[in-house]
Image 1: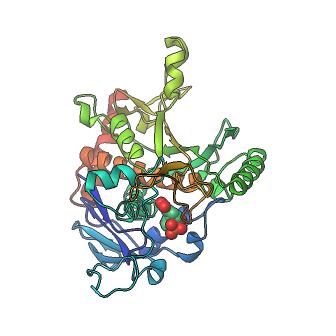
Image 2: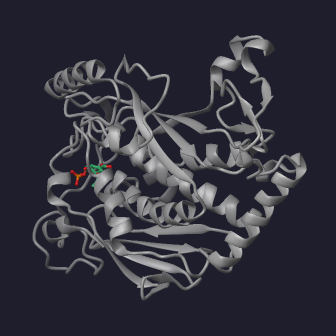
Image 3: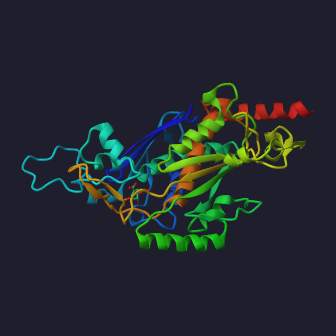
Length: 396
Ligand code: EPS
């Protein structure tokens, strides 16, 4: 089983992530992870924080001489902004003679944010105790975990990419055939979209939202190629891949919706307009020597991969920190107030696509290890090859 845990506050000294269950013998370099972290830092519409940070990992454990050991992989990512927050985030108790009130206390809680529910649940008076963790900064550590899983998947012939398909009310036209190197094409766009006309309109929309002190959401599509048929399982609710992907995606901060394939649209169509007809396709081993000429299912049937492209769309709401704030209650006084307007981003949807790729990588690497065994890469490969050979035998 592959699992990970992250720790770290947005303006604390560092983020930490521990990834457990990665087989031994996977070639892994710090640069494999840093490349993904840099992709997450891109995207038009982000605030000044992204200029302060240059995210890089340091391996603390689990990797030796360029290969994983099968032990937990711990990685550290330092926050460059920490130096500006040392007093505010100091773990030591405040000195009794400290002058003045504590700085950067947040009590004008933001509608849509974890601020209010968090302070009530955890019995805090300063919403900073909540917002420092309920921050997009945490997703850096997720992308590091996903980058490790992505390397394992690459070794098994699986490739993950994404692109932005909607931003702030503007749809991008999705090309019928996606580029072979989806991420190379998407990463070349400041919004990670494949539609240049939509990109121009989206940029104008972001500029207008910024002027208004407003924020924007959007949708990214994750596409995974090379998956063998049969990851996940139909037999029990918690082994169904659709559910595992849904949980992973909905755990990303600000994500409110997930669709696999046609998703919600399937409910509006007839069966004949939804299900993908199956035709023989000798040689397509990973799909079980068949081909679906449509892929409305988005690569899963019965909670298992079909061997077709996995297509997952993820919807993100607008960021809840507005520079022209919404009405709220000041939890210190109980009086009506305007929500706090901390430095933030106008939109982070392009980055969310990279985070969704990372979450998909974790779920799929876990499902791969479940199917093929996870002590060493050689063992995993041998088992995968034996499974694929059996799929070949079935058609002989
Ligand atoms: C965030 C607010 C901004 C974002 C940050 C998440 O940071 P700051 O409050 O320091 O300006 O840039 O995102 C990241 C730091 C990141 O790495 O993605 C928030 O309030 O959630």
